Amino acid sequence: MAEVIKCITFIIKLIFIIFLIQTKSSAIEIIRDTELEQFTNDLLSTLLNSSNIQSNELNVYFINSDQINAFVTGGKNIFINTETIIEANDYREYAAVLAHELAHIKAGHVFSTSLEVSNLSNKALPIYLLGIIGIMTGSSEAGLAGVMVGQASVNDSFMYYSRTQEASADQAAVRILCNNGIDGKYLISFLEKLKTLEGTKLANKQNYRSTHPLTDNRITWINSSLKNYGKCDHKDDKNLKKKFELLKAKLHGYTHPFSETESVYNNDDEIGLYANAVSNYLQGKHNKSIQNLELLIDKDPSNPFYYELIGEIYFLKNDYERASTYQKKAIDEIKSVNDLYLMIIGNYLLSFNEDSKTKKGIDYLKKSIQINGQNSYSWYLLARGYAQINQISLANYATAERYYLIGEKSLSYDFANKALKNIEKNTPEWYRSTDLIQILKKEVSTKRQ
Ligand SMILES: [Zn+2]
Image 1 (tube, helix red, strand yellow):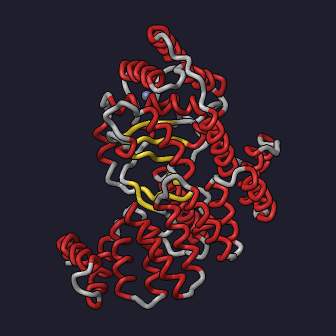
Image 2: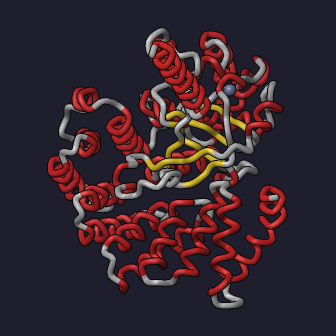
Image 3: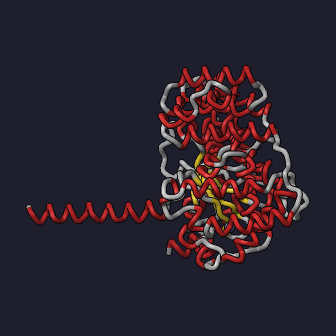
């Protein structure tokens, strides 16, 4: 008996160790959110004005983390922790952080251990939706949780630039900010902020301070380049300021405890209503959240993100009619529609399980994939839609694509073969299934021998 207990204890210990290793290697949780992506993209476009880099050449990843950090890997991948945005006092501080990272990219700075980072870069990362609960309801199949798969991978301990590169990135950041209408002193105010947070939020070593040199040194050299620069005291942009406050409020609601959001955002202005709409939603207080969002829509009927969230809540309440109506409004109001918005409405329409609505949903999902073919959840939904209207070979094809994206090559190969049996010849899906089989044939057959 004692032996058995020892053995069980050993197994439990072993499981615990494996769990620790696993959580360590997947410690990074990457999230997607339309409001977050579009706001950041707007800032980046401003900062890249008169630059030879376009904002769509960059891959921006957001890490759900309570640590402040931002860094660049593998050329044009920028990583930003959500807490960096939450702690920024002003959109210009966030712009300053982005400008610094852009400066590294523009100068082609490479980490001293770039080899190790590039070795890791083939490991795919799952990417989740911010506020994952809504969309994922009912799908328990393993590996489905990710919206898409990221190609870049990171390991915090590897990342640092040389002091000289940091100094030159700060100087270049000042230039980028001043040339594009943003006051460069916000880079300093952000660093001052980091100093005040020392020892509290920055206690963890995987943060901004572990990837960047000492704050005091930086403030000194930034001050001197600001002096050299001359006129940089640009006025703020009221519109960006408001959008940033709303974005921060939402991120706070999603990533901080309910009670904290409630005490930080205790006003019933738009910012407060939005933060509390999110935190009430996460608490399951759906009606309170809907109430806030209705007030917000009254105040600003052109904000797509209010419609998106209220739609998500109705979806959770199984009110697919309202969910899709609101998401449609969000699509009408958004500046440029992205794969996520089309994926979401596709999902809502499939949920009716009525053929005519399923077909509409399929159209939206195909558009979502046209915009971003890497969105594996759109492929999953597309397969579900085809299955609902008995187009089984097309469902098999969409499943083959999804497995291909998430690296399940053997399964992808099998589904592409299944699809090819009944799929109409010379259609795009037929060609693509044939291609997948060709691409995977060698690898899968060597593995199976
Ligand atoms: Zn840096």
